Image (cartoon, rainbow, N blue to C red; front, side):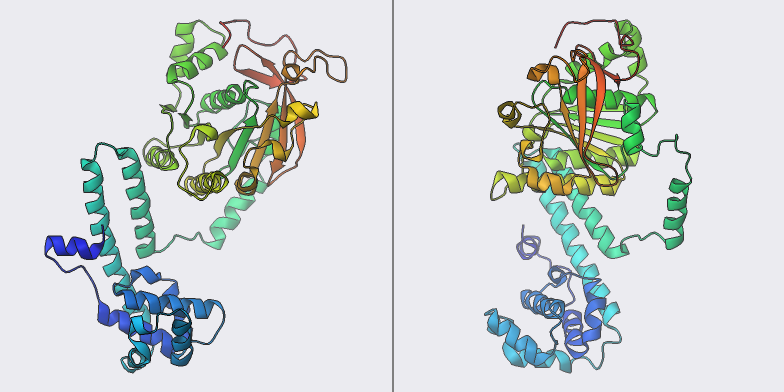
Length: 443
């Protein structure tokens, strides 16, 4: 709801400081050096009057192009935009500079303008939340998530973004560099070779795990969940395809114990499973933020991209990009690895090779750009390759193909030994017979 309309309904004037808005604009026109100081504090939308917002946008754009900012250049800029008359013409712009003697107090004035803007936004958000809560066709979790995101943004605007000191950054970097080679920095994976290559799944990384249907994407993801939980990590799984009981069966089977004993072990894990089809990015962001603040969070797994509700966009590829950008931002914000499962197309069947290439990844453009690690998973046996180059049967062979690794070596292929009925993976060179013996029904 528009803040002006809301104020009319409530019979109250919105928080505002239009005279200080004029003082801020006048100071920026009078002294260009003050523009960066103001720009660091307030966006154009912080101005209450629309004419002030238009002038601010023009000033920021002129400054961005490294053009001089004064009354004459501003008049010409607004004239080209067809908005000169809308802001009051040249006379009004001239008056703005007459109202300030210097830009000495511009930051103080800008902070007051910001505080009024934040007050208006809080009013708008609370009213919008009320409206959404009364509607039966709205996902309340997404409403809460969006409100929290907006409030976090407002809080950051008021108190400023926390920047770590150079000493803190150097100290943490030296700790990483001096860490023993056999000590993992990130979340452990099920494979020793993969741990060596990645040093575990790294905080703030977006990891894409992609494969053809029934090639082991979910199985390998759950193997990573199990390994992380056994290491005492806090894990969240968002399952858009399988029911939570189906995922739990797979985890129980993987422990190769009696069902009751396996269930007892899993009950001690720090694991949250969210089973809901067609969820959007806001739901995932909201739940993840809540877990991070309450119980802690070390790994997020999302199964899978193709079933997520996409944001409105010009086309599907752009919508996919919106999702991957949001997940990368979430990984960085919470400082946890986010593993997103994705589906590969059928081009591999036409090539007659089990090795995947970038074009196999649907809508790969934005995914490739946003991801820190991209892993292709394949089962050569299911693609008709019954023996490897050394003549070994491929029944239990899974190929983990690291196609992109922003901070490491790529492309790299890792051979893993799997039990096709159980979510179990180990390095190929380990003892072939050392796999779970418990054989539940096939999935």
